[in-house]
Length: 438
Image (cartoon, rainbow, N blue to C red; front, top):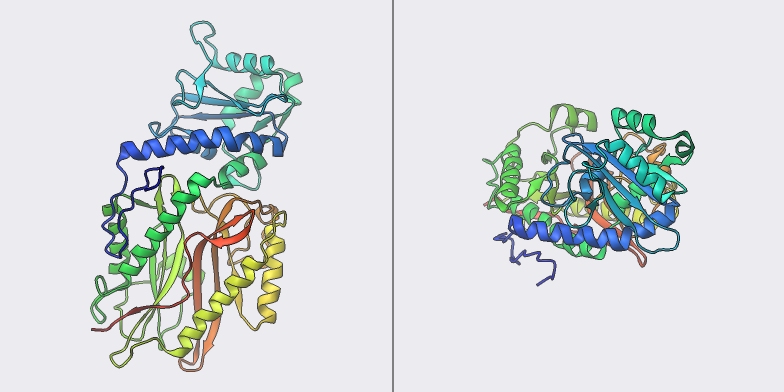
């Protein structure tokens, strides 16, 4: 099994998985952190031209980036926690220091002796003066909330204590913070593949007769089964899942109505086209997946051809989008090309793909939002970098003469953009899940 102790032992849809113990999870998390500090962070600091990165947080009000750097035994920052990363020009290593009362696990050592220097801010300023960096990166950002973690009080007090000559060196660490959040390492990707596979298995079990009895089970019962399944497995959900129904005689809710009022509770019936939106969190990684299932009528052994073709068109839109991925291109550029090609191909597309990883709605290039199909200012201008993961989220609207109405095929799968191009983290849905009526 993997040297990273990822013990998903089941191979069937029964999901009798042995999730790691808390102790083993901590070992995996800390090993990944050590690898990222040693092998990722130096490259990111070189890429962004920042030789000193300072992150400041207080307990229960953590900078979103700092929170991902804490060891597994630290569930929160303690008192005021200050991390300082410094990369000397003549070194390939990053010095990792904490101006704090404690070592931050094994990866970041405290350099503050409060008995010698009681003032934490002065200790920080002395450290900065000693290292004499060219640029001091702070986590403030107009475009990315995750990279905007320096709170007002800490910012004001830091500047009040910082000599004027040093203030000229301060720059936004936006690109560095986003790079840290968005970049996936080989260790993480090995785990990610298994986590996405488990997400798919939970959906497959939810959309089966183990959970659904057509004519009796409601959509909300399936939603809560999914929530409970995740809890029983020892995982977490990062958002409340949804299960919605498209059927011949009912109008499909739009995004605003669905978000504001939910999809409601309906009894699942033969002939229904089901859709779920579902994601889990484990080992600080997140999944995000949307798939469809069809409830067979008594006389049916397969889904109607028109629904099979509708799903195929959704897959075609996925292919158009991912074929337009190109390192260095902005999310808005990728969106514009993809929508144009999709429309020329006769599709009725909507693309709202987002970065995925340490957060569900993570930092990196936004490739459309459902209500911003002309591009997204700020986050859509950020460029595609290699070794990043995205929730390939989109929908295609299809008119069904058999139902005399339009339906939406709404798909979402984790996809990896690497040096060798695009690939799905663990495949994608190309066939409807079938649920027998009896």
